[in-house]
Image (cartoon, rainbow, N blue to C red; front, side):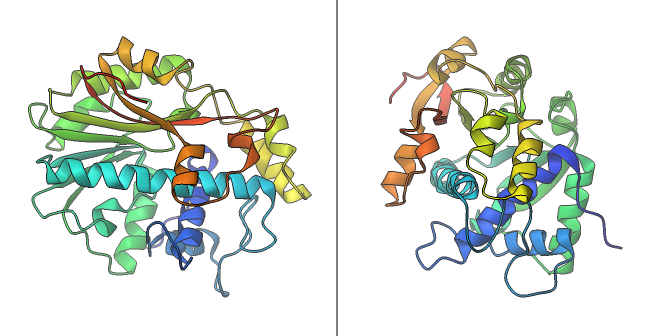
Length: 298
């Protein structure tokens, strides 16, 4: 039985899948996610060639709006992939995806069989995702454990019940999540992460320097479908933690590497959309890899 695609805030997961599908099709791709295209096609019931138009996401005549979003989604992915792989190579055998969405790292990173990837997200998201992966015969290279609970709720109890061990090394990955959280929700999330972490923990996440408002997004739209998509996105985004990442992390006993999307795009030899760097309405997006009680580098 096919399960309908998730709606509302959770439907933004499909924009990320769309960008991953486009990146995977590039000859100079930064990563390969063969399942991203399947999520988009099944969610939209599309049977044609390529990818369907989906709000701001499009496969041709790409606007400044979609160029910015797709560049952001593409650049953060290898940043996380590299650090997650290194942590697993160093002995971490637990990976927790907070707001797992359409993440397929349990399938595409070649993680060793002794690794467990816990995927925390709402039941509707995980049910849709599981259906697509099952129908197409996807096989995880490691143990994958879906944990159906909303990340705004008390997810730590269900995570432990699913087999998570607080006393073992862990990689926490909250990709594309905090931009949908308020400062209070962000603090609550990190407090739970901290309570579940021992000394050998790694936190990977990102958030924008300010709330991405409707005016910033609609200014980069080129048609009515994009403007509507931009307004819908503006209605679900929030401030995230607010303030500098080092300060936010330090309040919870974490510190480490902080960079931004513009720096990562330059590293990969990619064009940097003006919204991340030099536009008057720019919105820098910080990326971080933090551990408990370490010094901060930039």
